[in-house]
Image (cartoon, rainbow, N blue to C red):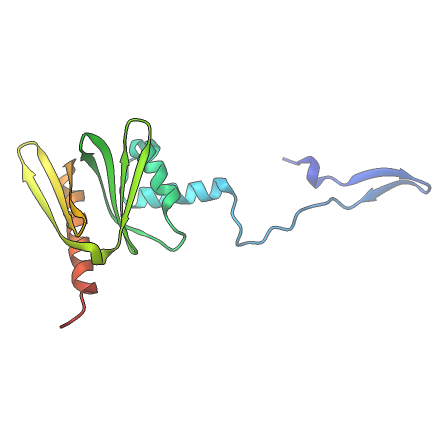
Amino acid sequence: MLRSSHLPFITYGRAGFEALAPITAVRHYSQTSPRQQRQRAINRLRAAGLKSFAQMQPEGRYLALALHANEHIKALIRGHHDGNHTLLAATNQRIMIIEHRLQSVQSRELTYDLVHGISCVASSTGTGVILQTQLGDFIVGRVPPEQASRLCTYIEQRRLHDTPAK
């Protein structure tokens, strides 16, 4: 499909019709369009195991926009905290807690040195994850068991790897 910006401009001058070169903006290869950025973010969420329904929810859209360019999601869970839909994502740089409240999205970020521990708890009502931090405990319930175990394993490995030897 040809756009008008790709067609030459034709003017009438003294010598007759003259064709002028089209004016185009210079685009560097490192620049990406908003559509490409959005598609890249969706692909990152898909690769982390977030289902397409959850990607369209406010907490999924916020996570896609909040990720840095060199940040990768290592583990992700979606559940409930205090009756709100919650997304807890462990990336290679930080832990993000994104909560969808009535008409807003609340985000918290933690570094791995603030985490004291994490535990997965299975009960009759479902699996839950308890993230123990210096700021207090954060409990996410109604989580798929395989996602919960993957998150707990990754955060424990990261904590053990980042702990300085005494």
